[in-house]
Length: 467
Ligand SMILES: Cc1cc2nc3c(=O)[nH]c(=O)nc-3n(C[C@H](O)[C@H](O)[C@H](O)COP(=O)(O)OP(=O)(O)OC[C@H]3O[C@@H](n4cnc5c(N)ncnc54)[C@H](O)[C@@H]3O)c2cc1C
Image (cartoon, rainbow, N blue to C red; front, side):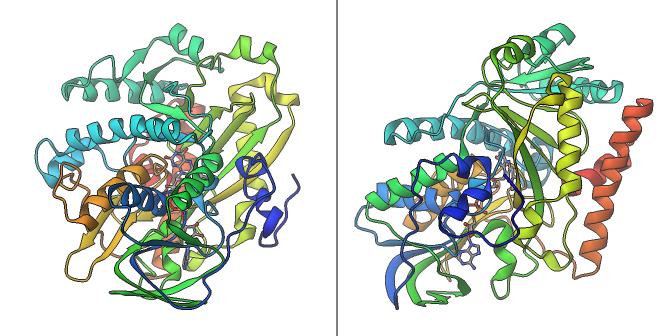
């Protein structure tokens, strides 16, 4: 797949990612809004947040009229381009949740996230969404002494919180290598709470299901502003009792929301399908998703058709929270990912990289994902998932259903509900701070690789941009 910097359209959407390229064709683009519209619930953004919300609303109250308004096509954003980890990861640590929201908050959020992985699996099976959902868990490797020290700390912390072997197991070097036959493995962890999925098949399949239930999805319709009861678009005005903002990394394009969530790019590559001899030597026999304990996040999965899809942060943050099709491909970052992947699996040195892509994910200033609704204005939102939104969007969708319908449930009592993050700094502070964090996280990894040294200050800054 050659780099193409023009905005995609029609079949051109296949260039968005490996996953889009693999969708059975032809690709259908839904009609745009054709004038004014009145509905009970207007959802802005046709990614997983918007579609899960529409799904659960239509399930709970088929009489409710729901419209999803999408600027491009459903699944255009991060939802159709991600690493396919349907995990129980949450952007805020359990300890921080307990400290900020009260004892037990972190555990409640963790259990809700773990249940969400199963819920996604339940729905895709029930609705016949063939997205290769495979719950093989996650292995996080330790490949330097510093990474191993972090692994031991993570296990000790988990045990101190009552998290046992079944939820997070320590892997000795042999057990870790058995799962993921990478170089330099000193140990690792395994959690069963993750499934590998094909995200484009998930989000596009969900859009079809939602539509078949009577939800109206309009594509090619840009929302310019949101106000209580009114969504202004390029193609007409939508009036709705409840308006849901589900625009994640793109939120800054809405009037008045410029500094709510910053778009930070994550980039990915995929190899050609790899032969049986590669897999017999390198594990991943249960399609475990995998990463290592470096500061600047990397993530991989063995795809259903036996490729390695591998991604990482590290692309620069763009001044003014800019988002452009050209930012989806960055030669230096993609080449760095290829080198990292070959470093993990030297047998890949001759393997072709067939796909290179990327996209913006969304980060709130305090790193705190949130979902909520203001009962006075009935403006609702969800997002700021950092890089862990694939399954979290499902929890958001179910929670928004309860908030919109007015049911006080266990979901509406979770600590992330109605959390408000402060705005990001104005430029140029935002640009300088985020890119400094990125550079420091990268140099900390290089330093650890050379000297096995721990650099905690850089780790903390790396969290700012690395997840
Ligand atoms: C490369 C990459 C890898 C990732 N890997 C993982 C992973 O493995 N696991 C994981 O959990 N998470 C991962 N993430 C994050 C995850 O994909 C997101 O958190 C999640 O998809 C967010 O879904 P969403 O619906 O909120 O946002 P999006 O999918 O970004 O959807 C927002 C939608 O809103 C539309 N929109 C924007 N502005 C407007 C407007 N003005 N009017 C109308 N529509 C608008 C966009 O076109 C878009 O379709 C990754 C992200 C990226 C980019």
